[in-house]
Structure formats: structure tokens, C-alpha cells
Length: 262
Image 1 (cartoon, one colour):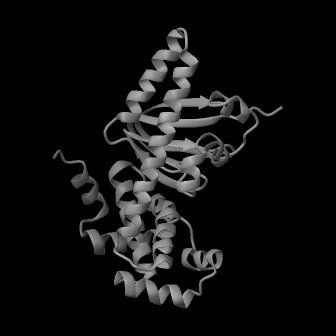
Image 2 (image 1 turned 180 degrees about the horizontal axis):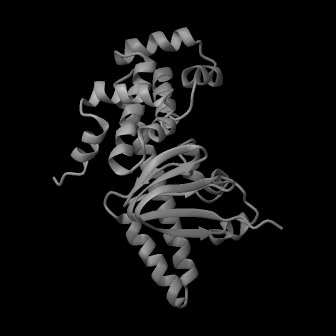
Image 3 (image 1 turned 45 degrees about the horizontal axis):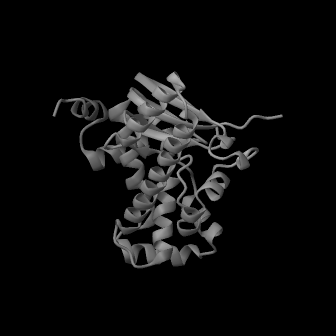
């Protein structure tokens, strides 16, 4: 019998490049994510990296979830009212940010309860776990709403396309794939995208990739070749020239600038 664990990973210090299901992002203190069953993830290029891992069985939340093999199914069963209202805003396999350390405070309480195992600790753990899930769903909803509003757009298809590009920027042939999956013509989306945002979809995607490349350059020791690969640039040369054109300083200078104290 296969035992199914879900995982919450919370970064407590340092930085590392985290690759989840083929998509890489720079992780730093205060970031956390929930790993769905069957997902593959790894860390590379770490700097003083530390984290807390919380592994839990679905039946920890409710006995009826024994055998649940999908995080969305877990949410659908234990938080059905939120699932029905905000379907699609589930937090698994997405990087979340604990800006006010609320999640970290809850995790510390969980660690304390688990270490002492006093009467009722399992119910408290269950409550804390549900609190993390609800706060994470709330963050996803707020994040997705802000994404659809920046840049401003009145067209739902363009809003969908923006979210898709932001989420899958590290993959190739994105716009064609989006159109195929959502049954839009490429010409329609391209035309509407420019009218709504003032820039082409390819230009918008390049902007996202450059921002991610800058994030990786400032937070890791990765070479420009490795950064280019992680953000799905065709080659290191084109990535380098795009960085120079948008950010002006050379890669080495940009790294120095980003490490200067504020």
C-alpha cells in the first residue's frame, strides 16, 4: 500500500533555486509552498539555506480523506464552501510569501505541540493546518485578482492569457499552447492583447522572463547560461543582451548593485 504524504515547505533562511515540476524559481526566507502528491521538486545553488518541512497525511485533517491522492481533492472535501466559491485558486505547487510571518508563527506553534504531545495536541495540529490552508487560499485569490488587474484589462481572454504567461513563463510556445487549451485563435488573442495592454504578448512574456532572470542573478551564483535556461531563453547571448537593454548594467555589475546594503 502506498502512503500518501502532502508537504508544506517553509524557507527559514538563505536562498536557493527551487525547481518544481520543471519550473525554477528563486526561494528566499519567508517563502513557502505546498507540494501536491506526485510532484517532483529539488533545490540547487543554495546559500545558507534552511527550511522547515511539514509532512502530513490527508486523514490528519479528516479520517474520511484516507486514500486521498490529490491536494485539490483534499481542499474540495475539507473546505468545500471555499472550493465552490473560488475553484481554481488552490495553493498547491505555487510559491507563496509570508510577508508578515503569520504562517511561520503557526508553524512554530505546530512544532511546539508536536514536540510536547500534550492532551488534545492532534486537534490543535489539525486546526493550525486548516488555518495555513485557508490563509494560503486567501493569498492565492488576492494574487490572482491583482494579476488580472496589472496591466489593466477589460477582456477576460486577455486576463486569462496574462495569468497563463505569468504562471508558465519558463515553458516554450506559450501563447500557442494557451490558445489551443482555451480554444482561442492566435490572431484574436494577439490583437486583443496589444489593444488591452499596449504591448504584444511576446514582449510581455519577455518582460516576465527578464524580471525572473534579474531575480536569479541577484540571489544566486548561477551563470548567465544557467539563468537563460531556467527562464526559457533561446540562448545565453540573447538573454544577456535583453538584460543589458532593459537593465543597462552588465551581469557582473548588476550582481554587485543588488548586493549593496540599502
